[in-house]
Image 1 (cartoon, rainbow, N blue to C red):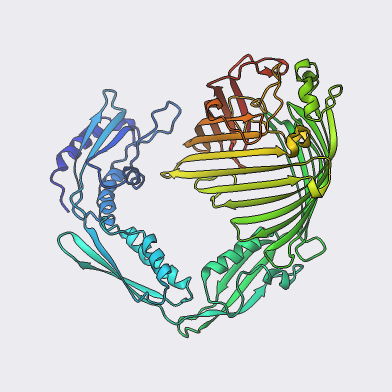
Image 2 (cartoon, rainbow, N blue to C red):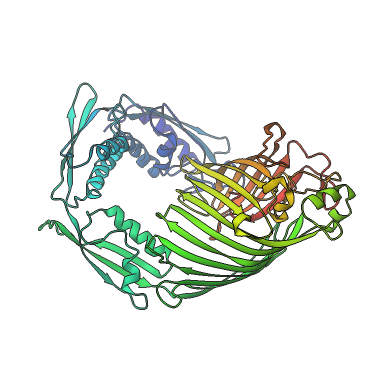
Length: 624
């Protein structure tokens, strides 16, 4: 197609390029590439579709160079880009070229006349009567193409595929959907989706192959479907995910053996697995601003004594945590969704405000409703010994507090048996546990100690946390978290709560303007002594920079209060700051610089009055 309006500027560009041809091919950097007239399509998507790209403005950033043949091809790509998105009359009307005086950089401005698009007048669906009214409504609401928007070819194809997938996931594996447009007025087209569902089908024989040490019964009880159930691809994918989570297999594939020529109403299924090594040893070492040097050694056997039973043993050391743990899981109790787990430990936690030793265990009955949701009930029986820091013992103003908290004012120690029961709920819809880009996480925890369960302590506690992640375009993420909790000692006696259960905030994963456990009610002399109510929230904007590097800007708030279920929102502490991220296989390595907007008056840090309003934190994994 001739381009009379762009011939002259293109000729001028060629003359300019020939003037510096002695520099060789690829010697003219693209300093700036801009588009004018782009209003109805995504400009970033248009730029990504082209080979000609603007180089980085940073001195160390990647540079790009002008290639005449690539630019000529990009002019055609712009036309194709717009046609695919429903703009048949769009064209490049002109472009301007600005070569600098040194003739080593060029700025190009491309002006596009978009024209009017062809819009979707309506979407008519026929042959979908086999779906329930609810499923049909959900399908219509979830179609990528919508009434009134430009007739985007890619969205049209996705719309047809979405309709086919819903039919196949509703028991119609041989479903076909034809799509055709009809004129419905000037620059308006109606899209007709005509379905041919075919026969209703059910699962047939399930053929399992590749198992060796893992029994076939273990595999079958993880399947969410059985012969005779209505055929759906969702159940096959869910079963495949469940088998992978057992860590028994390095490969799992579930495929239907459907025959379009015969169109049988019973679909046999072939399940192929490759077993992984049942035993593995993992080690890790690292360093963090709070843990300092750390090391971890863990042994796991994922088919201990057969039946997919899981046994594990772990040893860990850091300046915060050290000790040994063991666990054993019976994966099938009552029904496939239920498991029973035992955890035992001899552990020491050394926090800035206290030190605590624990010996004991937990018995956990868990119901895994699906890969995203679980609920569990735990019985806890642990012997605990806690002691506050030596510096706090020199604070005579806290003596009465120590007695009220059940601590010996001479040694700062308390000990006893914590016997309780806990209820936990978790739902996670994020796409990545280590570095989520979208979805949400909801956690809830209820705990009752003492009363009919015995033990040295008597309290109940509750905690709820929500996290929400929003993708902004293809790269940035807006991450948010809210966490609220409280503890209520029975009879109003603080000593009914173990000291290590008291609430503290501050640190690398909390309000980052303060160090670990520095946000808390203070003794009269300025030492954090923990509280019984807590509220915190954080927001982060996570943006990639280049390669594996990224940066964040964060805003944290929260506080801890001495009384149970008492939240003084006018007394919140605030912190802001930037952070740097580097992607690693085990999660992003991070450095955060937090700055206090309203310092805590009278706070002692390492026994001395707080000297600075900022903290630096570095660790592995996002803050939340």
